[in-house]
Amino acid sequence: MEGVSNLDTVWVLVCGMLVFFMHTGFALLESGFGRKKNTVNILAKNFLTVAFASLAFYFIGFGLMFGEGGFLGLTGFAPSFDGTDVASTPSNLPMAAFFFFQLVFAATAATIVSGAVAERIKLSMYLLFAFVLVMVIYPIVGHWIWYSEGWLLKDGFHDFAGSTVVHSVGGWAALTGIIFLGARRGKYGKDGKVRPIPGHSMPLATAGTLILWLGWFGFNPGSQLNADAGAISMIALNTNMAAAAGVVVALLVSVWKLKAPDLSMILNGALAGLVGITAGCDAVSPMGAILIGAICGGVVVFGVLFFDRIRLDDPVGATSVHLACGVLGTILVGVFSKSEAVGLGLAYGGGADLLATQLMGVGAVAAFTLATSALLWFVLKTAFGIRVSDEEEHIGLDISEHKMEAYPNDANSGPATPMARLELPDVELALGRAATTET
Image 1 (cartoon, rainbow, N blue to C red):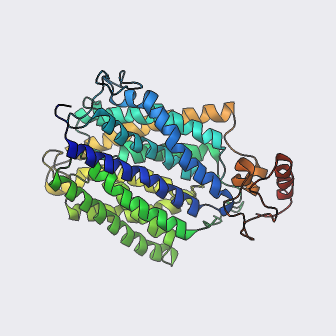
Image 2 (image 1 turned 90 degrees about the vertical axis):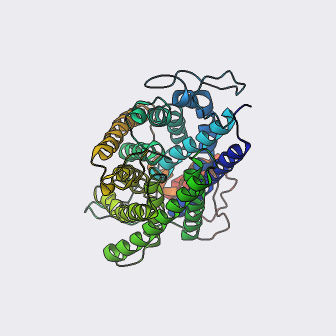
Image 3 (image 1 turned 135 degrees about the horizontal axis):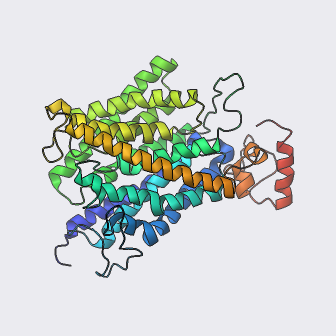
């Protein structure tokens, strides 16, 4: 194909594969932060998200995001990739390579919701929400910011790799889900006190976070969409430095606030830095990246404590990581950008214009995503009910929804009866026992 670069294509495909591998990280992180009785359910949601998102993005999402149109795309649905599809794609890449790279980003936005609503949502309702999110909500926001004629892009809004498009969209959707679902049973006492529900496997959570850190070297440098040696090297460096700063500051703040080096906070500190740098990784210096990561690393600890204080139960801290730091990282582009092409930030004497544009874009995306997500959650809750019963939540979603356990040979994992192959009457019996025993 004329103009297509084999080197750029291989680079973008490899980066897309790294982003795809991030779903392993999300699965391990979320299941590690959850209780063992919900491990299968969390793994299933993360695995199924990739499949449902792939179909939603192929048939509708890609066209809404990159098809020709003003507010949303109106062409490019169910593309054939034979040269007849009308969509805005880079000339140096085959359309199929660009589609694949964008697809794995779309699936990431959906899986953010999974962790926030874990341990009490019906599997079917989560999958339906994720399907519609990737099919309609996510691509419309993406059209505004990443389509060549998108109105926010034309206004000068800058979100290089998705602090807003991916992370805050997933975060706003997660927040509305938490509100409509309510907290897990026993999370908040009648006296108003927060009752910690520790995750069952910090090794899984740590491995998952390291995989996500690795995957981000596809997420951010890959968004360059070409193998420009200088650009992708600096983006990778900025990505790493922000994560490192997020870790250190989260460590210090957790020691200060919690009187201990809380590992869950340290892990989320890395993710906070990574989410925060994603918007401006192409436009800031390594020192700017460190400052962004440090700010986000502190904010994520306060965010987790704040959401608990207002009784919004987020088992993995997704709203603090992806929402708070996605919004904050996008805004900080207006402070730390040193790119003439993007616009100079406040720290480099560029005035408040870029900062104002970033604030405006964040506000527009927040309003749209909150409204559409809330409407979707309301419809699902009213029409079908989105939450499992108290009995099912008590015994765990692995048994009640999947009729199997993640650790069937673990004597401490639950009822003594092997659950991997329970028949329906056995499940009903187990549910009956759950009503008279403690978790």
